Length: 296
Ligand SMILES: NC(=O)c1ccc[n+]([C@@H]2O[C@H](COP(=O)([O-])OP(=O)(O)OC[C@H]3O[C@@H](n4cnc5c(N)ncnc54)[C@H](OP(=O)(O)O)[C@@H]3O)[C@@H](O)[C@H]2O)c1
Image 1: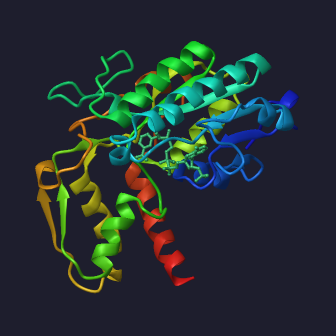
Image 2 (image 1 turned 120 degrees about the vertical axis):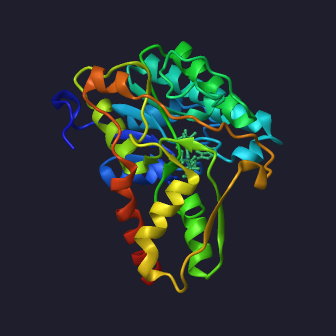
């Protein structure tokens, strides 16, 4: 990917290494530096030494406390990783003239009937601890570094380990029936689409600052998403898949989820020409890669 000429020799630094977005960033630009929590603990480390050692052109924060249920019992941990740490990093980047990009979530909204699709100006109302810590993080980052760019994403997916996609396909590979919620709706985001957008925006001659929505075009429920994944995996499954739609109430969880968090990404598209891809376009590649990985 091309880089502004004056900065072509400086690296882009990614906070996070093994996560879905961090991995998609590494795939998209093998020259960037991705740093796992063993090298830099976002929740507690002072970023000065890291930034001074690498002198990056831009920092993309792909790290977060993403265990939505786990956060209910660990609000301090979620706040440290999703708010205090990113704000400290944003401030250290500002002091050094380093571009800072951060990612937030559709869960800042409560998904009340009739409210979606959400624009950036819509009222936020997080329903769980994870979402509150991410919402606090948005404010703290923008206060620490008003030049920062924050993209809100929804339902990020890829072929990685414990994702929803792998969980349902693992069941079907074992010939087990599925019950999938049909009353939670959003705009899924293929991790490589978000990675490409972050890299392209980081490398603009002038990076746009502020908070924008970025999520994957077409809306879907988890049930729609599962059905699309099954259609693409059908011939590899051992038995005819059985999938039943159920209400969220069939799966009580510690953290309450918003029901309809479809986002409107037109503002980013108008300002930069960059918009979300269609999640349906990413799904075939994810499924193909998943089965290839299993053969290896
Ligand atoms: N997943 C979704 O559906 C979703 C939806 C909307 C928004 N988001 C947001 O999108 C961003 C990326 O999410 P993701 O799905 O890629 O998350 P993920 O797969 O759960 O990865 C989390 C990343 O955070 C890093 N991390 C965890 N604790 C850390 C610590 N103490 N210090 C430094 N790094 C730490 C991990 O580092 P290691 O590499 O060391 O393991 C990992 O790379 C997050 O801001 C998330 O809130 C996610």
